[in-house]
Amino acid sequence: MAIKGQIFELLIEDMTDEGAGIGKADGYPLFVKDTVVGDRVRAQVIKDKKTYGYGRLLEIIEASPDRTAAACPVAAPCGGCQLQALSYDAQLRFKEKKVRDALRRIGGIDLGGSDAPEFLPIISMENPWHYRCKAEYPVRRNSDGSIVTGFYAGRTHSVIGCGDCLIGQPGDRDILDTVIGWMNEFDVEPYDEETGLGLVRHIMIRTSGSTGEKMVCLIINGKRLPFADELAARLGETVTSFSYSINTRRNNVIMGREIKTVSGRPYLEDAIDGIKYRISPQSFYQVNPQQTARLYDRAREFANLTGSETVWDLYCGIGTISLFLAKSAKQVYGVEIIPAAVDNARENAAINGIENAEFFVGKAEEVLPQHFAKTGERADVIVVDPPRKGCDETLLRTMAEMSPSRIVYVSCNPATLARDVKILKDLGYRPEKICPVDMFPQTVHVESIALLQRLSNTRSKEVTLDVDMKDYHRIKSEGR
Image 1: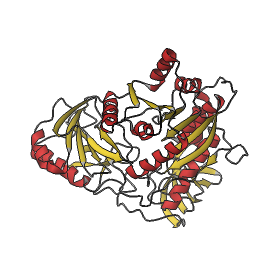
Image 2: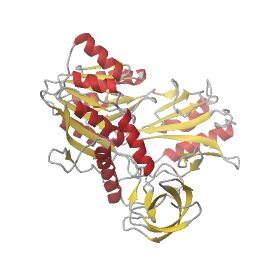
Image 3: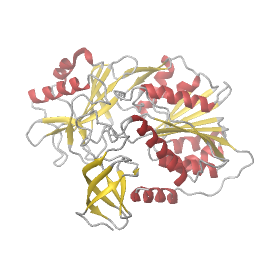
């Protein structure tokens, strides 16, 4: 066991899910931020635990062949990108390994076995920069009294100011500077988390991948936005939609429930594969348009529709996947908890002339069982794209009871994907194909899509969620 303050020379042999390097000091694992596999470094122990510790990088003695100079000057302190010091090819290998490890450790899936699902190569980007079409910038006052907006430093709520974000969209910085200039001119205070005072909490900017149009939404700690018309005039024609969101709660939730449009339309328009979408400030919409098209192409391939199927799209958002699949299905049902998103989904179906898509407001784990109990209608294909926490156990069981021949599972969290794939396997669904998708270059995050095929003459077994996720958190804490 190492002691706090000790200095060691380490070879970085692995990386944690969060992107920290792992080296061993006399067999004792140390997690060292800002290092990559293959680095030989000097590091000082800053926190010692019984079975592992944390180290601070002091010196890179010998750089890894996979190490590259970070393109952004604030990449190290900023919490937005964790992998800029890693070459893009190495980033892709890291993400494939992350998905494989989760499937093996949490899902119990032997990817090298004779009955293993096909693990497809990660879908990469040709240019892994300036891809993000939505960003939420916190606004705070610096210690010198100036207003700053940028991104949070890693594991803190200290705001790191930056110029043009290299994974964001060109033009965002001009909008941020315009808002800050307006705040200074009209004495509009930024939010203070410690006191709960101040008005402007975040500035959300969306960019349409197909038109380049901009949406700006200020998240405010109040009921009204003073001098809103003056700000609208300064933003001018560069912004298609300008609104504010009311959020007076003292928590980490960014967007409020109430939206007030100041100028322009209450939505942004985008298009994927010829399908037009209207997006409200509250709507979930994938942040990488180029990779979204590739992800949905793979989902359509996995769904293998012939035109005669009934499809359920759970956590459907504004209907992106639903409408993408509707052209190839007999009927599509979408379920989403956010009413504004469902309104958008219905509008999107109408503007695209799609009549075989119906949308329900509510929790998927409630709507689907209720509909199934009421109608007894089964699904041919179920597509699910849940939040990071994955699917509710009731939902997974109802999905299996509806006996779809295929389940297409889109996931932003390899751990909960692996957990849910294991449960669905116990419920009679064999994982056939797994494909990672690099939706978030320069970061540790990875999207995945899995195809599960129903096995005939299978009976469900009793399974639980808790043991699997406890094991996952233990593995993460040990950095294995």
